[in-house]
Image (cartoon, rainbow, N blue to C red; front, side, top):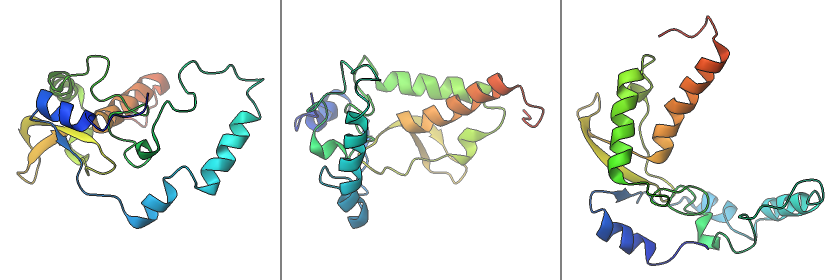
Length: 161
């Protein structure tokens, strides 16, 4: 099911306001994020050694992700669904607007999106503290959600807000 070469074009046509990360990939990352990387091959072998213990995934099978998906793992592919499962730009903006109402710790004031590894970003209509247009991504929205989830689970006195 790997990514389709037409996906970027289809997304551009479906959602002209979305921006795909265009910062590129550093040479060191390009060397590490490929199927021939010895560390990744060793990891696959270790996982293969426990397949009798862990139930085989109906999803994560050879060919589920394409080799280029490693380079663009923050894009729309098996690693992160940005547009699949009815994830629309409007839902990203609504999630952002909701998070603004509960962000008592100010995560959204300090987090920003770097645009690396094929991530798609969506305009919010807001500006950041430097006056730049604010864009959000799935990753950026997931960070405060995870932190607030842990805050609720821990009920720690060290959390303020």
